[in-house]
Image (cartoon, rainbow, N blue to C red; front, side):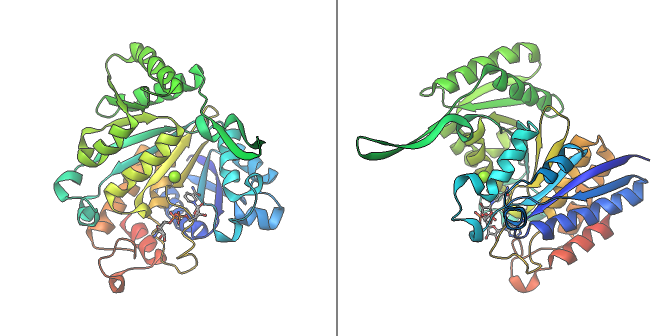
Length: 357
Ligand code: NAI
Ligand code: MG
């Protein structure tokens, strides 16, 4: 029997609904495999602001740091949109990534054969899409200093700084080459080296790291071209590694290949060994509280926690197979249903996955 402590940070909007679904699946996996999962809940985002005055209370940080893995829902919503930058829901996410040094964000993009028809792209383009985007998560524009507004010559101006240290590039490149070794052995590093100095350092450093991974095929691509190739030939990719901002945009673009945000999981991993697992989607305030959210992205994120965080590959595969099965059987939440009348609820979808396990 393996005992694991899991920090659960439901957050806002549909966050609590989809994390509840993931917990239900994890509890069943634990029962089937004789593991013990202990869940410790913490506040994050808007709900933490409302109850504790800030988006990442100290208790949440402590519960998270002491856990073996963190399962997060989503944060944010219109209620908190007008708060100043330092006290906004997403600040809670940025802070926990920084606190746990979660520098590598993994987003697998894979089409489910049962859902090919719901992709906005042609079938023959998206069939067999299977790649992973590894996005650097703790550097670049979102964190670089200076980051401020100022008045100069009577005019307001604002500055953000795109800064990368060699060591930050090195460690994310290593993650990418390691990931490629257990996949198809191909890395595409995405940058804007024709205009950005930080991208030139990125490219040189990735090339240096590649010397120790010569069994992996490496190519470089400019980000604007990568944005096109993701749509034109998505099956050509295996592992994509890129900096924070480019990764944010490309991974949302890539998520549309599969048809719905409600299906895509992510993992953020770092130097402490505690990873954070969350759906790619946000808090979906438009459907929150209606038992309509697709829980599969959160459930898949839980599977990533088992695989990457706990080394429980078999259990993770069992969850993935259960998801494939319910989709093949025709279960569809409203985001992926052809007609809303045919849609199942969040809880019905979750129960179906549990039954398929
Ligand atoms: P969103 O991902 O929350 O929603 C976009 C659209 O997709 C909406 O129509 C929503 O109903 C639908 N959708 C998303 N997840 C779904 C699911 N599981 N099942 C069915 N439909 C789903 O993105 P949006 O609307 O841009 O942002 C809403 C809030 O979420 C904002 O406050 C934003 O800041 C926050 N957000 C938080 C993220 C996080 O916590 N990691 C990531 C992205 C946005
Ligand atoms: Mg995004």
